[in-house]
Image 1 (cartoon, rainbow, N blue to C red):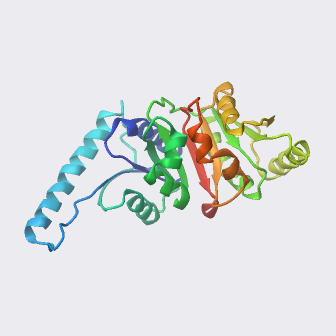
Image 2: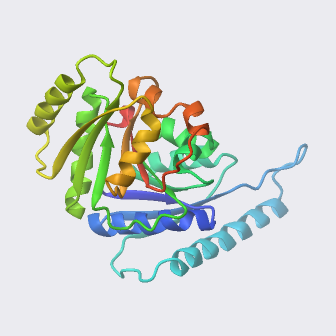
Image 3: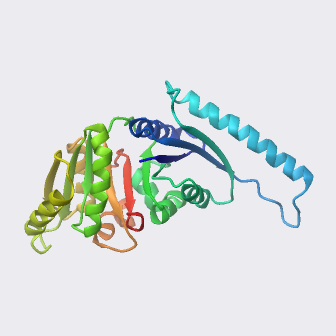
Length: 281
């Protein structure tokens, strides 16, 4: 991992994401891009005047100072050798601006804070995070506001036994190695699924052939309430990170992230969520 792009709106919700992004940048000796997007729309029937350009320039200067202050204020210490880049960007769409800069800087990871009570709910219902989840050209890390995770000791990867999962776990293992973390690969399914045990054994053998990482464990959980029991599993595993594979269609997305299940959710996860987009693997 060479470049991490962290985007903030200066809110308290994004502080936890900053600290985790900084921790990852230190672990990988990666470049950390700290970004803020602001919008200064032109009123209807107006043109780009000298006055407008002066106001725009003033906003760039003010936001850069504010961004630097936000960064310094919310981190206890900052390593002098850290490769930092502060980016102020004007755009009407936050998600499009983040995606554009992720491509521009060839980012390996986008890190943002989750607004709202639940990281999972925000991923499904929040327009910015939802767009990033679907279109991110690289891995996406969404961190809930109340998270204090900076040391990732236990990572849970929820699998649906797809070939793309192998590629995603290969990338995850490189992150886990930096933290000397345990990876727990879990498949949660109903009893009606065909040969769940057999699929798990096949997946386990295939993964061990492809991924050279010793600290991996595998769990098969049968449940009629898959989403709720995924949250239960995260709590009982004392997970520091939930990892999923995002695709446009597929059993994993259909089973784990249906909006109606989110609305019924009683127990809310506070675990950061790392998403690998199939198109970016």
